[in-house]
Length: 293
Image (cartoon, rainbow, N blue to C red; front, side, top):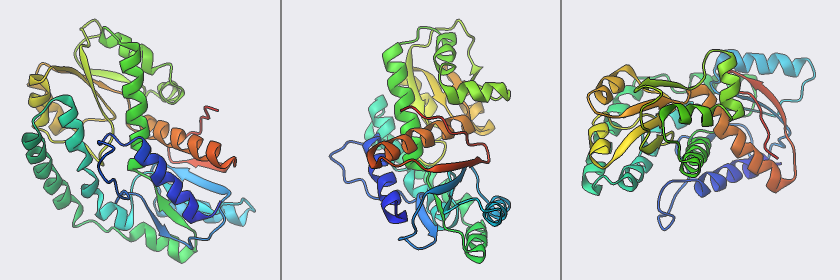
C-alpha cells in the first residue's frame, strides 16, 4: 500500500469513529500527519510505537541495516507540525461535553480556556527535533493520534453501554477481558480505580479517551451536575485529579499506553481488512499488536 493511501485510510476510519455529529464537516486531524517521506512510498513493514523519538529512529535504522524491511516508522503521539497543532484537535471535546448534557455555551467556553492552556505549553517545545532525525536517516515517518484515540474511546463507550456495569469493580472486570489491558496488567499497569471503591455504584459513565489531551479541569463539576457518576479515562494529571476529587465522581483509569495500543490495533485491523493486506509490524515503545480478525 502506498503511504498516501495508508494516510487516507487512517483519516477515513478516524472520521467513522469520531464522536462529533456526522452532519459536521470533519476535516483532517491536525495531530495526524506524514512528517517525512515520499507519499508514493510502498508500505509493507512498519515499526510502530506509542512514542517515537530519535533513539527509536536510530533503532529502525539499525534494524534496516540488519535486512529488516522497515518502510515506515509510526509514532502514536504527535511530533513535528502535528505536535505544534495538537491543541486544535481538542475542539471535538465540545461535542463530547454537549452529548453528556452540558450546555453548548458552557462547553465551548471550558474548551477554549483549556485549548489556550495547552497551546501555551506546546509553544516553546522543540517540535522538529525527531522529524529532523528521520530526515537525516531518510526514514519515512508519520504520527497517528486522534484517529486511533477515536477508536479506543468509541470501543470502550459502546462496550460499557452494552454491558451496563452496576459497580466500579464490574467496570474493571469488563476492561480486563480486553487483551491490551490484560497485557498491561502483566506489567503492573492495568486498569485502576483511583476515586471511589470497588463496590460503589457506577451510575452513568463518561468515557474520556479522545480529543488530543485531557479536557478542561472545570468540566468535572458540570459533568456531575448533569448526572455523570463515573469517568473512565486513559490518564489523569495530578492537577485534574485534585479538581475531580472535589466532586462526587468516581474515576477509573483504564491505562494510557494500553488504551493507545487498543486504538491503534482497532485502526490497523480495519485498514488490513479493507485492503486485504497484512503489514509486518515491528512493535516497540510500549505498543503490542493484537488482531481481532
